[in-house]
Length: 186
Image (cartoon, rainbow, N blue to C red; front, side, top):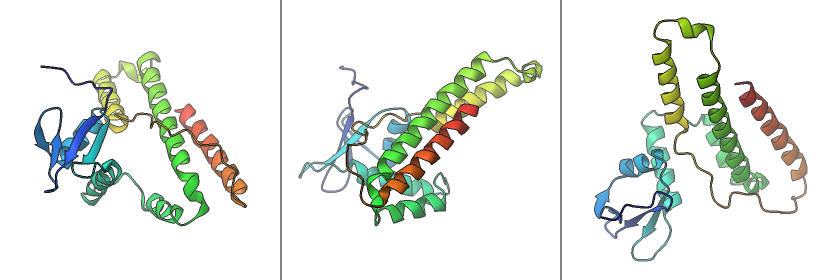
């Protein structure tokens, strides 16, 4: 049997019946299965069998909505509100780059935290059960941040800023710098 290439996206085909078919394992999958593939670090691509349309974004949003509706709230209401607003403002062009940069900073911060936890001895390290607590913290961080990968093509395109958006960009840059400082302190 040929092993699937973890570097290439897992192709999921959606049939007219809306059932989702895993082309690697030749079986039907659910949104929870797709969510698990992604958490395990696998890129996923979902296409409509008949039209060939890429439905990945639609299904990823559906997965997020289902998690949020089950009380697994990751996105604060303020962030969701700002996202809705960004679809109707000039900020729409900078929001994707801002979010990508923010997640990249979180990934880098997670990496630094993991390194420090492994290297820097702490007075707490003499406490009974500390090693187990440390392993749990590492597992938590990996689970929380696991599977985050760089989004191909997420590099900001060279565009001339729209009138009035230069102040917005300066504010976003300031906020990014502040976030980076906070993460470095961790």
